[in-house]
Length: 112
Length: 111
Image 1 (cartoon, chains in turn yellow, purple):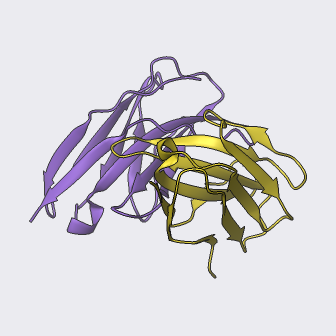
Image 2 (cartoon, rainbow over the protein chains, first blue to last red):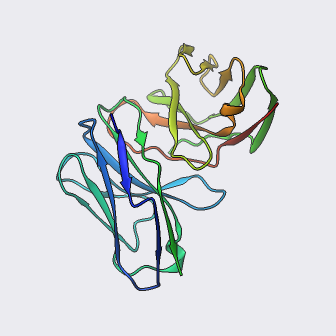
């Protein structure tokens, strides 16, 4: 059982390039989330999807777009990468409302 | 959102019990208390959660104050593998409200 799978694990981009981070879960969870984590900080929510077909902004959505492709997959897109978006990105999913969130291992993104 | 306050860091000796405190004086009656931890270079993982009563599972125990304004995560016997950042998070009972992370407590375990 793979849980939450994020690809790629590492990526280096140049300023202005675009990139899509992929996330897939195999637990039949309804809700999925994208967070970013900067050094020494807690995770901050970028976007989330409470169920297939819906997406909502989190605390730091500027510069990002998301797509809930189907129940399994939730992608995060950077249209024009900026150095301030250098961070570790975590995807998470959750089943019923009172179940815990399950996290992937993260994508380490550097923008030069 | 109701806020939590945790010490920035704590230290423990290996094989000793560890008590990680969390203050949440503005907690509402419908907030669960959740604990997650994040090992180095990994995503957060769920530890335990509770509402009013103390809770035990294979990883830890959660002691909740009678007035619910504070709680304590108890690791009964710390191992080197327990070195991580521990997050105390409040979450409403119903709905799909995302977790809101603070800075947590960085636990160091000394051999």
